[in-house]
Amino acid sequence: MEGKLKFLRYIAYVIEVLVLYVLSGTPGFLPAILGVKPLLLLPVAITIAVFESEVTAMVFGLICGILCDIGFGTNIGFYTITLTILCFAFGYCARNFFVTNFVNAMVIGGVTTTALLIIHFLIFCGGSDMPYLGNHFVRHYLLRIAYTLIFLPPLFWFNRLFRSQMKED
Image 1 (cartoon, rainbow, N blue to C red):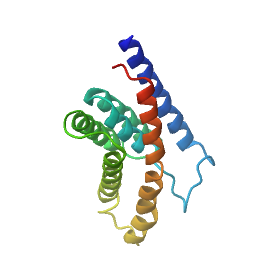
Image 2: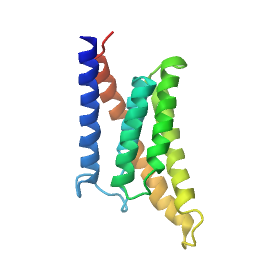
Image 3: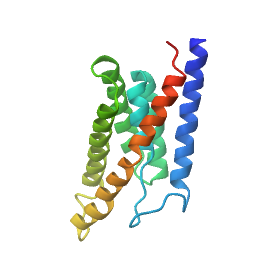
């Protein structure tokens, strides 16, 4: 019975990731604020990572990273590599070092989302000769960080409820 619940939980996570990927890419579904749409797969990967083991977290980080790279037009590999490593670390830490609760998940999600998007900006825009680089950062990257973080609490509570309903122990 334990293996069956775990398998069903993983299938449900895959469905959740795919549904949010499709919704984030659907034109007109999520309103674009000043041309910016949220990265829904970042909070999904983070919330799955804090509830699951490190290997499961790593696999879902890999899946979400690949979909982010494909769907959002970045170079293949940035989100794939970073989310895989970070989700593995979050899964390991959540299992061994800290209690999974709302505050910890919000801190992890906020710091991770902010750091990933700032690093993305520095790598892909920082060295360019683009005029008004600071304006671009504020209008596109900071707005995307804030818009993405709006979805972190509902996804945390959804995955927590889901995890508690399909817990094998």
